[in-house]
Image 1 (cartoon, rainbow, N blue to C red):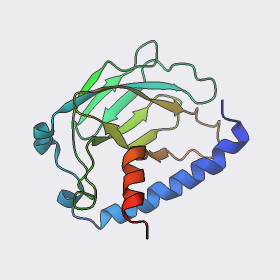
Image 2: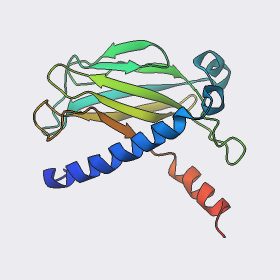
Image 3: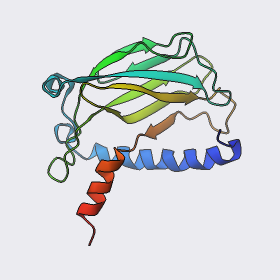
Image 4: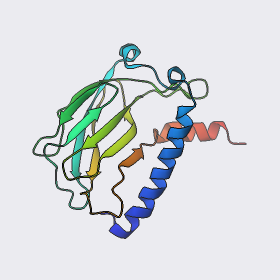
Length: 171
């Protein structure tokens, strides 16, 4: 389990990184950034099951709302804090298509639950024809942290892909 005193500085770093990435994204035309959901069907689909738990106790949160903006749909968590297994389209990020193509799709998750700080997870990896158990989202009760600002997190890319990208440009 993560020590509480080490969580806040890491959250600040992630928040600032997400904000910078989102600002940069504002200056890229949408169609250069990702395929639209309508065009994603040609890339197939994958399945994902999101789990939502309390950030301090790790107890499941029943009735949390998980929104997938790309689908314009929301889903509720069960007694175990899990959504049903969700089938989602593979929406490929094409920013790197001419450098090193990504073989997976990415979606966004926005999570709400009464009494908890909202949470947004960007670039959630979904692989065609594969089941993903997770991600697990840690929600924190309002007033239990020094800020009530929503958590905005970016999921890193596949490690093998990142290593290949780094190797490709090594001097």
